[in-house]
Image 1 (cartoon, rainbow over the protein chains, first blue to last red):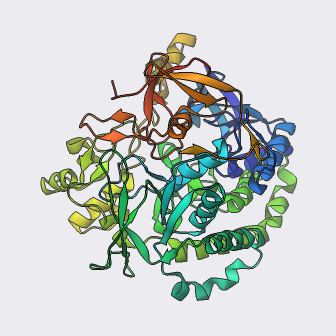
Image 2 (cartoon, rainbow over the protein chains, first blue to last red):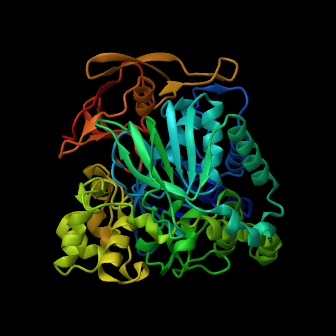
Image 3 (cartoon, rainbow over the protein chains, first blue to last red):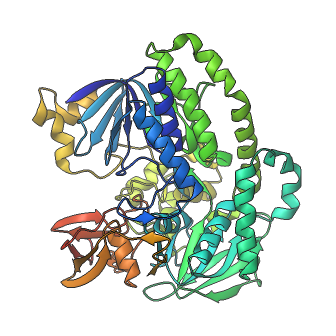
Length: 476
Length: 95
């Protein structure tokens, strides 16, 4: 059954929660959808509900408060609900035990977040190699360490924070490799740190923890290969040049059982693309993102996008963007239109401050082009279908010059993850082989279902009502 | 690969037992299957069609590398699925 709603918010992280709250406070009827059991997203990840944690982190406390506020404002939450497709006319196809088969919303706010950028290097599919985000969730949600001897490789302050959390929890952190060479590049950006006291405090206390425990922090270093039979046993690292290419002769091999990889984030912008929103290629924002106006509206009327899913910028920026979109969405559905513009303008200084931080972050921590050259011909690019770099190169040699054509020849991007892991890796490989810019090559065109769902979900419309299921949705 | 936190910091959910490939494995309510496997020192629990070992990679439900069969249902993400008393988990290759 397709249910009609005023405002549908997809994703209950900081951006989605704030958007839902702002729209509900203005009087709109809001449905908030998330694939997790409870709201918060990865940013506000709480300890498991069955656990009792004596001293929740500041993030967890903040998330708890925001979530209670949103629920208190009358937001309806659909937990464990997957949005597997989006169709013309603002229709979202859902799968979840408490969810209708589809929602048609007057306004959709996409707050789908971002995920750790996969980086292909020899050995990256070995168990024991995992994303920094995954390691953090394991620790925050379940208080379990991903390994005993842990090497962190990546870029940005988040991996320093993670390293400190791992050390405090008792792990032996071998080293933290930072791809960027910070000292030379950071001077022009010092001003953007003004007002970021919480972040500065967290960063300093993390660095202090690492310093006290003697954990080496190596700027300008990266991964060459992970080694091991059935799991990681050691990792070869090397000094990087300014393009992030390993400098021959600088290699060292470190023994460890876990490698946490965190080279920034990729925005989850699939739904906005499925809805027909114009996209642009912005390496500084993580990749492909929807073009938006100052109310966070995409090129499709009534479709808004906020937070990391519309361009990586962190939790506080996501909240400001969410609030703006929430106010604008409510106004669009006839609630609080009078004061809307004024309320949005009031957020300008906060938005400007967070955008300054976003620009600084991008300038310092956007990986160099060499990152996409860490793979070799026998390295897997598509983990699901086990397609190697050589397979992709062969397809290009056969004449394929778009991601879609390479996909048709090699099956890369056709697996369970629907190209989330390999999309940018394959695009960069094609770009390199054809000498064209990545922006022009682009990602795999998304096709519903964008998440694996039971076949029954696709037919629920037919089962529950007169409509014609997927065929009917696709015709719209 | 180990549970952390003193009783003063964290009190886990109720202790339960799940059955992994026929063998009981201790777990606590609130943990995911992947969490319980990692805490028991298991890193690789699936083989791809090319015979390569896989375990947890993304840890947030996006990469589908950590798939297991749960109570007969195949292709379940171990990193997202909470344990339950007596849950029957089968690891191994993707069916």
